[in-house]
Length: 224
Image (cartoon, rainbow, N blue to C red; front, side, top):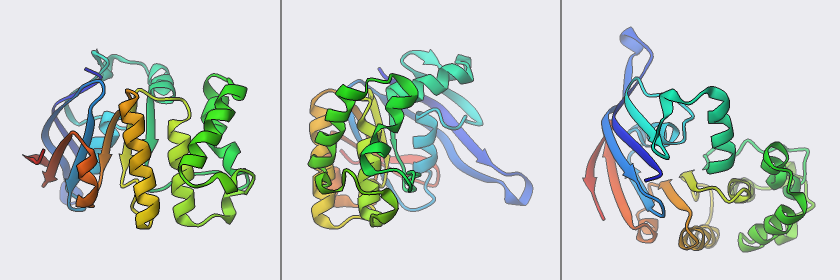
């Protein structure tokens, strides 16, 4: 098992501003799983993804990563774990506009292992699979929103993470680009990477092996 969420709640704010984003959510994520999570805006999907990725801490309940209780892992270790083991694709890409596409994809390598020559080849392969081979030396600030999203996806995969967490990875893309991304995710999954993705698009849950529907901060149904 790569990650486990046990009876997790998450509360934001207090008093009249108090919001209970998660209400006793439990989820097992096994090595090689390809999980889709669906639900309306505000159902708790993004909060759950952030807790699985050790970006935020639950208000109550337990989270385990690779059989280790996350609350027992130091902040320094968590930072290393996120950099080496977890790939993130969120709706806001947080790319560096003054760097080129290729440079942006390679940023995680600079921070963690420095294997530039090997990773540069892999970066080019990822960008070509995402239909961005023509943008390698283009500065990110010149790209469209959809192109930036695809660059962010390539960046999330550059260190070959054990688990990829993706929040609406096709949200700003047309159908052709979306299909490219889901096809890439399928090949990455087939190679052994665990994937958890959030989507509102029912057309893409066909790629997942397990699909859950969230509502009101809970997992309400297993769809697949």
